[in-house]
Length: 199
Figure 1: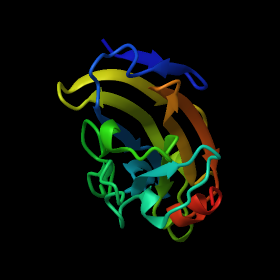
Figure 2: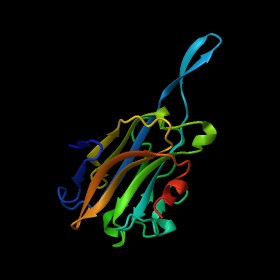
Figure 3: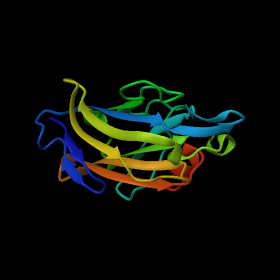
């Protein structure tokens, strides 16, 4: 049974799940309904919001030292092939994960201390969109071999006015891998701008 975390909570992944080597990180969200006023009254409708999930492979100092260590919609695999992106979902419609990132812990290079998961809104400024227009956002980690959900973190804060989320990280600790529910917001109109903060 999956463990539901709250912001700031940390949990062991590999220590409590013997033999765990391959993870699926699933991220999901739904566009919130907005009210549009017209000649004949108000009408609610959903806005298409293109959220992009990405993973940053960081060293022990929290730095992104290689371009290939940013795995995102335009670079779907790290050079070491330990982290692979499922591809871009343009709307957030439908049930289940909107985007997935696959991690093979056995292939993560020794100089990578953590895998930080972030989400940006594509063309946020041009479309006048922010995370206040997104609802039911979550991240979950599954055992890829069994498809069993191990942990889930629902992002329930108010992120209005923000165009980026630093969602969570998977990191090394005493030879094991742990999960940290971060849930912080930022303003970065493109994943490259967010990644620049870690260089």
